[in-house]
Image (cartoon, rainbow, N blue to C red):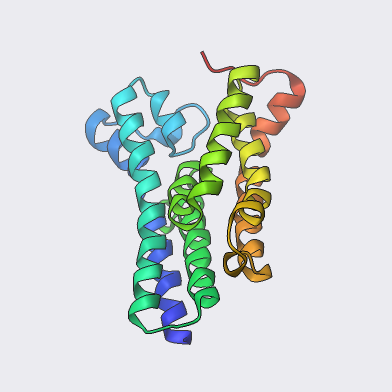
Length: 208
């Protein structure tokens, strides 16, 4: 069990740490995305380099790496003949958390990265698809009303653990699983600290 957990932690972190935004901008535009806008490596900042195509590719692949980490955890746990569904889903939640951490603190860029939103969406789409659909609807509603993508992301992140508790079966909502999901949401909100300061100051950029 310890070996299995370590494999999931390492593989999930490494998958999450692939800096697609940085690589795409470096390869196709000869720029360092960290020198643009917020300095993050996510899709929103990639778009600020002037390439919507690269931003879309970054968004999709950042989500895919989160999804792949959780699906790998499910596959490995089930292949190891773990009969306990609670343990399987706990390992999957751990994979989601590690993939998000990998994106935020990638070892390949001095443990700096993005805010983890797209990676979280991909990871939780594999773990709690109904909850992530409702969270995305909430995100769209907040952005449509306020025109702030950052606020929509934080509201959806804050609501997500409650949505999981509400919409998922009891074997997928044990305290350890919910704690990992809540920790992931908290990290996403903390990574938006600069956005929070700009929102309070009234200087946050609105989505057009």
